[in-house]
Figure 1 (cartoon, rainbow, N blue to C red):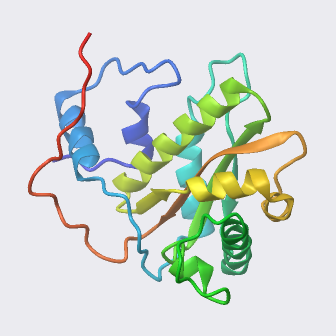
Figure 2 (cartoon, rainbow, N blue to C red; figure 1 turned 30 degrees about the vertical axis):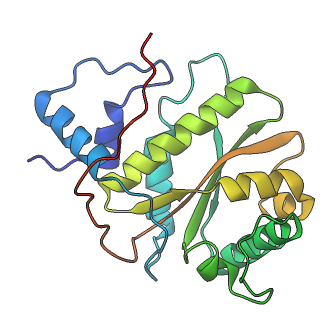
Length: 211
């Protein structure tokens, strides 16, 4: 079976218009396998990505995110461990204050490890505040990033808590260097999985309303 780089996988994933013309059968089968095997990672390995790996990953994702009429999603990548500790600590503090943090987590606990699974990196997609197009681009960017990461053997987890906390905590937004007039629309924790995900023996039923 062919081995695909993230850029090769995403080249066939399409743009914001959803185009997937010209895909080969081998590519289609390999992409479908990635989607079926993908699992949300809750515990990450103590292994970091290099800045170059992160840059290449984001570069492959960013291609094709705009239709030429608007700016694409913009990214903030938390690469440094010290910054990651500060960001996750501020997020956990806001979540605790708002009553959104699970009971039993001590105030002095390592938020990055206990609350966020020890994720080594965080990727944030942000755009203009109040812009539905920006929110759409950011959501697409995170979906592409998740898929590109899976092609590299990486695990990921959507970080909705970071999105909510960044919207409610000016201190966290400042720590993330979110520009004034812009909003964090999507975020993803990414790194190497801390364990091999167990494959589900059965697929849960999907609720469908047929019209």
